[in-house]
Image (cartoon, rainbow, N blue to C red):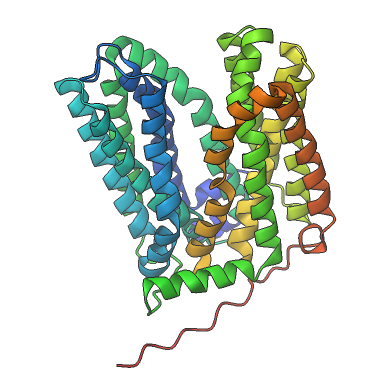
Length: 432
């Protein structure tokens, strides 16, 4: 009878009635808070002028540490997808949470014992990035297996996106206070605890929750199969290329040149902080708007939503006032939540479970691999042609690219079909 009552629930938060998803959501949302706090503590641990053996780090040292986190993510994601498809997403995510819990606890202990050298920090952050590279592709493959009703998949992704948005807004603010009062070690210790909670929540899921099946063969063969499945779906690789070029040409310059522009015209750090906080608030609003909604042409709606990312760059390039720039960031945040939810849901609905983690890995790699390049070249390029020109070019690109993607039937005409695409044929076992 309890099951019958549950299946009749139609509220927008009915997905939280799914026991497995509820456990995962609690653990994941908790770990997100810690993850969003840690970068603040990490930055102050590096820049602390009473810190490292060299007397404290600067911008160059901070760049090394930040790169040490990103590089393992990019390198490990494809392998993480293969492992998740072989052994199950839940196991991989549990191992990643345990690894990150241990490394953050060690990092906190090292800071309490006395300031470590910059290379010790680089090594610890690299292990942290390794855990993230394993966790990310497994996440996309796990969620569908947590739900008894597939029509709740969009709401599940919406709630996960909401958790990320709230953490993005709240985590740095809390971290700033805790770091100021107790030091960066306290924040990293909290982060370790939150990863431990995430790992515990994953142990509450049944063994049948992972949906990926084990497949025989070598690592390279599994990677080739995953790549073949990825490139065989035009709607998937087109949207991935779209997102990758967005990160290169729009978002990276915005993150680098936005603070510089704000310093001269938006009131400095306070104004820029407000813009980014409003962006996060917009993502929360977008998530709330998506609850209970399932548009007939999800990729078309998602692509329209990406047009909003042109607005903040355009506002900065036009020299708009702080209220107008914040309003542009609000709309961009709404669009980010809408497109993020729909992209995740379509992938989970239309890709066979047997390759979902690998395809998620290739999608994530394609979307983010050019981001560091954009971060590196935005400053030098702005020195040549001006920050406003770089930002305006990015805004124009985003509008033009969105229009091109919308004109492609494989994206714009794609509708919910109710059926998952055909799974790949099993690969024969190697001869002995």
